[in-house]
Image 1 (cartoon, rainbow, N blue to C red):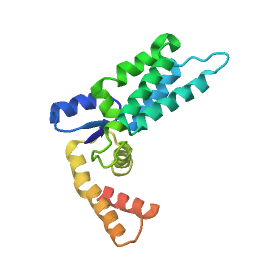
Image 2 (cartoon, helix red, strand yellow):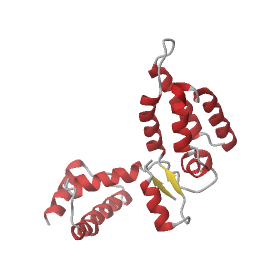
Image 3 (cartoon, rainbow, N blue to C red):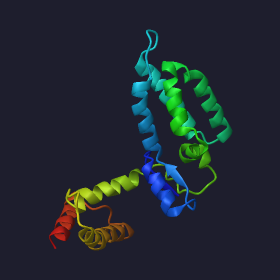
Image 4 (cartoon, helix red, strand yellow):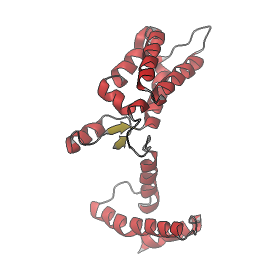
Length: 193
């Protein structure tokens, strides 16, 4: 299984590289973020119900669909969502949801119901990977975004690997986490070497 953000380009690249041999899930955090952002422009308030309240209702309903572990029930919730929202704002909200998320292939990638009973290590988001990538950029690469390939490989094999081995050893020995000072000392010493 591979978990990607909500962009379409990684999916196409993964399919070109691996074909159908891997299952590609969407990061649920990125899916919800996309929905929240899109709801801002697609939900219109009324005098009785302000837009903010309607956005919260729609987001809550979408979240329930997203996390429902039972496929039949989730599909019934989609139908209920359609009947409630298909005429709101000239149908723009429903059209967006239908076009971007309801094809059979796309449903399998974001609905929790399709993940039930399958091993995927509970990885519903790619936030851990993004956190690690941020750590790599800010601590090991010191904020340099353009790094030559040979330098990056050197940093990964020497500094990053050594750092994570040391962290693992301390965990095994029950020394706990590095203090900020120890981590900074290690990073500075490895960067200067």
